[in-house]
Image 1 (cartoon, rainbow, N blue to C red):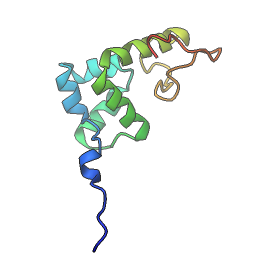
Image 2: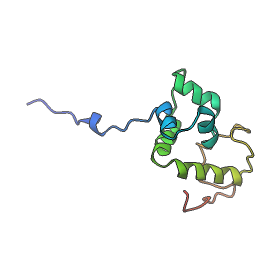
Image 3: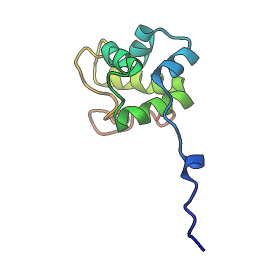
Image 4: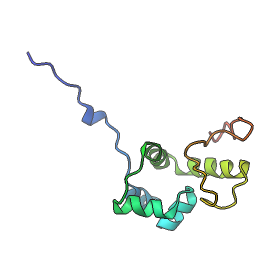
Length: 112
């Protein structure tokens, strides 16, 4: 009897497309980029298919799809702690270090 493979396709989670996610949130490209501290060009490239989100960005998009307000609050906290005045201004990627302050402490247990 042949061995059956697990049905991964049913369990696999799809990363939401940026355009669908943005439209679900009723945001323009500019608003989406600003709210989630992403470069506008990156959002445009993802939507136009010029580039695909890397794994870290895929995780971020998945979390945004589940709780966009929590992501926005966490990013705002990160920017306050690191004294970032404008999204993308210093080219620091909040995707890589959302949860820690400069002293290594979590920003807020309620948010993160």
